[in-house]
Image 1: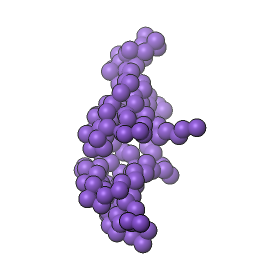
Image 2: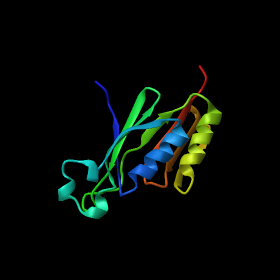
Image 3: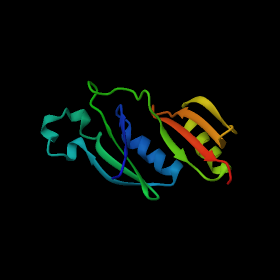
Image 4: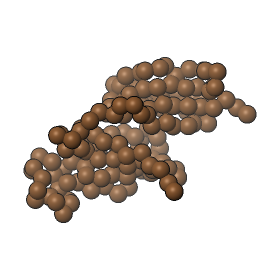
Length: 136
């Protein structure tokens, strides 16, 4: 079994995945727009360039996502995407990049369980937790 995070966006999935690939060192793989799909003729013309499905690979991990139709989009609530990073400096760099034009919920800092931990909602509305465990 494999679990994936599937992120829904309000029309900015392509920009978000491009940014995540840059920040997290990943690569956008499979990507299909609504206009490229078999249901293109059922979609409003302004949605033909929006993402119906995208995949981002980061090392051995994947995140998937899409632009939700306006009547179906709901902002993420009650969840976060957790990134575990081994080096404190890298954790701080990733946190700072995700916080750019976003909202810091908990500044990245040392905690009783982690060398670094922070919470942020990025500029695309995705909530993240960055965790860097203490050295063993």
